[in-house]
Length: 259
Image 1 (spheres, rainbow, N blue to C red):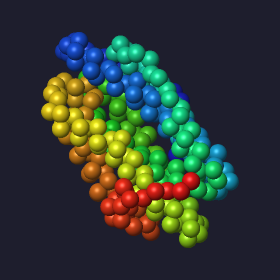
Image 2: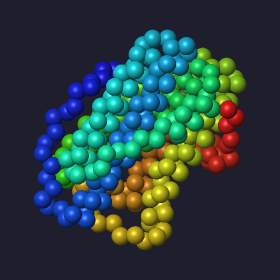
Image 3: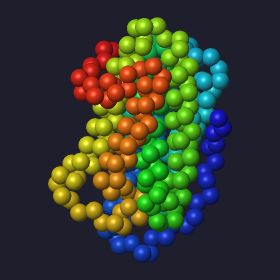
Image 4: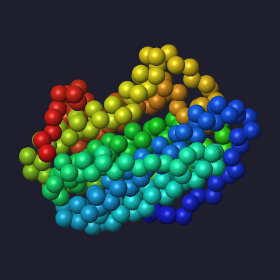
């Protein structure tokens, strides 16, 4: 697995066909994307450190390479946002700090971050970026989304392969915890990704087709991409690993994971 910190060659923005209102809506997504990619970088950094005590090489080095990928993504999102006139992103480190505080030992931290943020999370992210790139028409937006998409696809493969290696070494208590973590992680992903789109649809808010051309998924497309990723990819892969994928999904709001 190779990583690069060099920014990709980006085409000029083609903003002429869009109104100020359309651009104002679309540009607001880039600072949010930058913040999310920086969060991923911090997760991978914590994972790499924990994995030094929990897994053999080359896994910790692969996670360190992913840190550089995610930092590059964050910088890319900042660059695209600036070209489109967006404000600088704001980073809130507290959610990551709280997440890590609940995982004090190296093995549980490695297992949980690998399963939830990398395997499950990056799989869903890949599907969302793929759908966003497919709908995008503005040249700069499409190029940036495509650049991130390639890395996200590699990261989700890394997550599943690394967790399969770790799963083989886990004792029964670790496997039981992983099952609960899978449920908790799926619930968190649904709250973050699908439920805001559902609320948009429930409020019958208008969605200008130009938003999708500028990289913002229609709420219906976002919901479809999320549930397709979970049902067609995540749940079967959990089951192949040895977890109960169907139960993890069905019981996602019943599970409380002890710190």
